[in-house]
Length: 289
Image 1 (cartoon, rainbow, N blue to C red):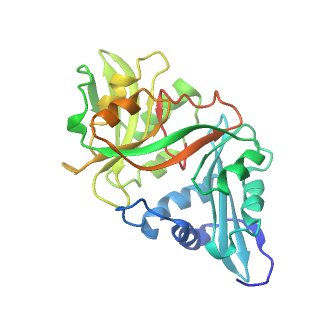
Image 2: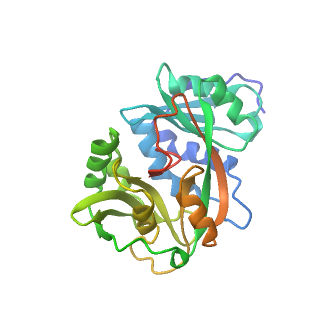
Image 3: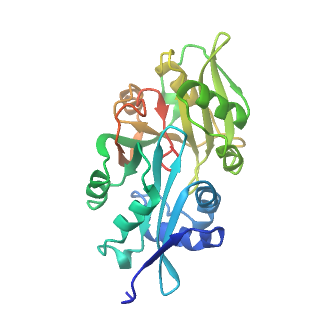
């Protein structure tokens, strides 16, 4: 490790490749899972750099850390906080977090199981609220959803519904969603009423599909539409396991576990305000909540 001090500055589009290298250097995939390829991260990093408060740390001109906060119109979410392993324990993570958040309140994040992560976020005003479990399994083993109708829609419609239901501003995300591998936007209807919306995609590092995000309308029973979404496959994908990030308090969690779904990974949702995200109505995206 160089003795030169780290210099923090705003991230720029030309930093995207270096940022991907920092993230991959910290990636410890669950047992049996492949490592995340850096190329798969590039569209996501490009979006965060262009639309978030993104900061890099440089030492002798080399990017050794990255932090980013991104607003959805209601709160700011810490999408990323990574430091090269050779610079762990130097206080660089705290500096990046402070710059990525600035004075933004309220604030949220997903904390990894790294024992250094949660104290850092707690000192920044975020409380640990619940675990998130990353589950994969056979959707054919799930109970039926009551005959709800699932149909394709546009990414623009997903953004409109998220704004109407929860006040989230997703307009800038539409272009990013269009880069998702085999991405598919769907709505769930109970009769004529739209009760849920979701985006599904191919997994980035292995076979199978993934619910990139899902939301249930505030006045709808969350379980039947979420079960319907868990059966939706990405475009061009006819087989393989499907999965999602499921909040610990979600009523969906015991149903999936009893159906044989396996926990592949976990983290912890942290927030300065426990009312910002309803764990019963969302299957979140840990990066761009």
